[in-house]
Image (cartoon, rainbow, N blue to C red):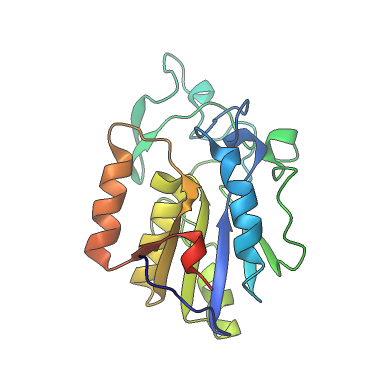
Amino acid sequence: MTKEIAVGDQDVLIVVDIQNDFCPRGALSVPQGDEIVPLVNRLAERFAHVVLTQDWHPPDHLSFASAHPNTKPYDTIDVDYGSQILWPDHCVQATRGAEFHKGLHIPHAALILRKGIHRTIDSYSTFYENDRKTPTGLVGYLRERGFTRVFLAGLAFDFCVRYSAEDASREGFDVIVVEDACRGIDVEGSVAATRESLNALGVVCTITEAVV
């Protein structure tokens, strides 16, 4: 039996990128991505404090394969900040694909944080862009509000959720990933690598029904 985790006033739920383009029939569909929506809605009801994040790319974003001649989605290129996987065009600002899934219903969310807004740098983490030093502002927001423990759910487990969990842990927050309220893409073993990384950092993985 999974140990129950009680939610308190210093806890915040970060709901990562539950957007049309990451759901079935989207431009960068995460398998069964839409299945987590009811779980996330139910989970969010247990939290007084919720943040929603949203990929929000300009049309010619560096991470899009379409921006690089003679490449295709899931190729890897070298950029100023290291290795970058190229993706199909997705979550372009002010398009339907960038909108939240219509079933997501968290009216009490206090903040919508948009990331990936700069053309020349991708942003998986909700805390830092992919150079690992350009902040999104989320660390400051959470500290100003007095939160000490971060719960994460959303898409995709092995990219934006993983990077967010790693950065939250490095910033000194206690971190819990609600794994059944996530789905992964699994590019070349990235789901297994995520579990190894989170375990090494002491990040707790749990299930929705254990969060009370």
